Image (cartoon, one colour):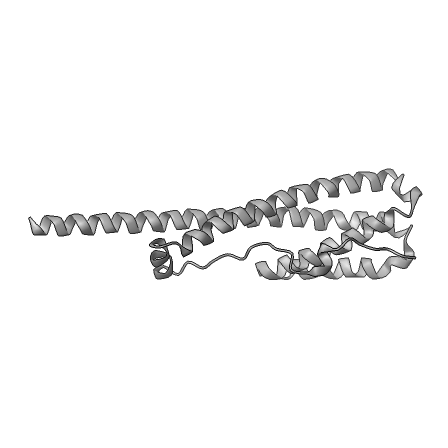
Length: 183
């Protein structure tokens, strides 16, 4: 009788551990998938930017510093695998894009250029998808991180080496400000 109770308790604990481990793995894979969706949108944005820059360059020759910064950020993004470094590069790129779009307001003939209009729309659509992807990533990562911290799943998470995921956040005060362009 006692042996049966001990076996039942061991089986219940084993089932709980396996279930919790599998749940954590599913959540971890969802976080990884949601990050890959952000990377897809970031890559699309980085692919659109050179076309937009080339279109705008003819109108804004004196903005070469912005173009050089974008090129450097694109190279940096391609050469890093760290989520936190990519998040920082993305924040910097968002600021540079704001500058380009704000400067374009001062060039009516640029705003009327069909290529610029099409590229701007594609970039705007990509930014919307990127915004949704970031939100989905943060929601998924938060759910995963919460599961890592809640008792008793935290015991299993710590035992198997699960690590919390970095949330996508704007940690640059300049990224929160409106772009002020002066000539």
